[in-house]
Structure formats: C-alpha cells, structure tokens
Image (cartoon, rainbow, N blue to C red; front, side, top):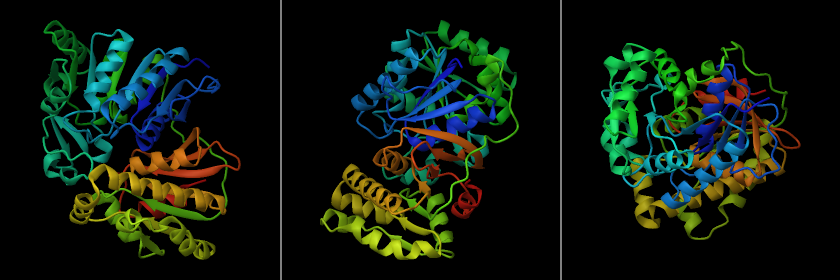
Length: 418
C-alpha cells in the first residue's frame, strides 16, 4: 500500500484517537510509538500515525522530535500531513502547538494551515474562535486547573497568537456552516490577508467532514482527531462501517490511572466499587521509597481474582499541594516513571490486558514496555479504541486521554477488549 496520510501526534492517547478516526473513515492505519528508525516497515498501511511524548516537553525538544517524525513520514511517501494535539488545546503561552505547527509548515514549505481541535463527540466545540467543553467555556471547565497545561483563556485565536510569530486568523461559524467551498474560500481570503494559520469553528461532525474536504489542497492540517474525519474521503476512501478485527488476548488485567482530570477522578471512584484500588503517593516517591515494588507486592496476589487499579489521580487541590512541594514538572515525571515501572512489572508477571488513563502516563508506559506499533480495533468510547501492541506475546491495551470516557469507562474497556 501507499502511505497517503502521515500524522504526528503529541501524545500516545491522541495518536490512538486519530488512528481510530482514520480507520473508521476507511483508511488502514498503523500507529508507531516514538520517532521510527529506518528499519520500520508500514507496507500494510495507508495512514501512519507517529505518537510522540511532546505535549509538555520543552519547546525545542517538542519541535525537534516533531520534525524528525515528519521527516520519516516524508520519506515514507506520505502525501498529506497532520499534526494532532488534544481537543482541549492543551498548551501554555510558550507552546507547544504554535511552535510545532510553525516548524512543520516551514519544513514542508507550505504557506498556510488550520487549527481545529473540535471533537463534538466528546463535547469539545469551537464557536467564533472560543473553545467549549460541553456547555462551559474552556476557561470555566476542569481544564482551568490542569496540573501541567492550565487553560484559562477560551479564545483560541488569542492563545495561538501568543505561541507563534505567524499571523493567526479565524474561519468563523457562518462560513463553516455553508460547506467546503465557503470554507476553502475563507482559507484563500485569509492567506491574501497574510495569515499563515487559522482557527476554524466546528460545532458538529458534519462541520468536521466539510472542513476535511476543504483541506484537500493543504499540505499540513493541525487539530484534534475530529478534523481527520473528512481527510480519507479526499483520497477516495469511504467509511467501512465495521471495527477492525483484533486477535483475542487472554490473561490478567490491570488499570493504571495517571490523569487527574475530573473524568478520570470519576472513573477511579466508580472502579473502586468493583475492584481493589491503591493510590500512589508522590511524596513517598520523592523520599526515595520503593513505591513501585510496594505496589507490585500489593497487586500480584490480587490479580487471580480480577483487575486491580493503581492510581495517582487526585483532586486539583491535592495535586497543587504536591507540585508546590516537589515542582510541577518534577512531580509529573516522577509519577509517570513510577506507573511505567509498575506496568513493566505487571506485564513481566503475566498481565496481558492493560488500561491506561492519561496521555503523558500512556506515553511513559508504552515507552517503558518497548512497544513500537499498535493495531487499532473497535471503539470503546469516542476517541478511545481497543488496540493490540505488536509485541510477543501480544498485549491488549486501551490508552485513554484523561478527559475521555464516561464514569464506567474502565469496566467498558475491559469488556470490549479482545
């Protein structure tokens, strides 16, 4: 097969979300973990999604990794490129969305791109440049208290303009509502005005499909997974209407929750009604205690009776207190490293079915496990498919962005895993 779409995602769960969207739209897709080397083959894929761990990395590192992944995708023959980030536009005033988009445009020698994080299926929409989570502005949602990327400004034109030297424009709802031709005309008008990147409103899946069609002539598209709904159609692909088949994976199951989002807090609370839950203590980590070993000693005897849950999930107030004591980035890195060590210990001792909550945590886990590629299966919840890691023996994985899924997501994931 010929690679038609090459995508760079800033975390593992976002990559899985995008791969899921492309598969549902009729495009065979492989997800790769980390910048691939020259030995990786993707002969059976029309789309390749490279999952990085760059969302909260230093700007220079995020740009360098993204460009390295882009270069690999160019050499693989991709005809159109996607930079995928979170549907809540997770970033700071320094980046990383603006700097990465700017660098990718330059590397592709492309004059213009869009920014469209909307994902109506998960309650994320953009109207007149303002981002909503459900009925609340982004700045009034739980994202306001995100421990790494607090989002306090809902105006994405302002947010993006603070991150880049490129002039930022807006394709507003009235143009989007008129369909692909009007959207494409808006692109041309903004380019004539000197804009290099435009936030695009989207309130429905139809809007996203229309936006994707309007992007047919763009070398680079940036946004959430939703904007990819319309891209395969530009290459003559049609929705296949059925989930990709995965091999059955038997064995014990475990759940690792690193996200502190409101959604994951509810999911951990619901899981505690079914299964044993152990809370990871960041302070004990900082004191040098063997936290991962203690967690494994607690978990292993319980696995024969069903899943176990290990969570660092906590309230915003508790997370803020830990960050004040340990440092914001330092606390997050310690927790991710510990959960990754727990994942390795569990898999080494026979766990074959693993659910991971949190983009940064998922990235740390797949990296520690040495996973290089995933096969995408049926959708568990909007943006979260079942996957099988292409390792020996195979490992069933569900990698979930912190904000995704309903209260009973963990049980649903384990029920639907192959």
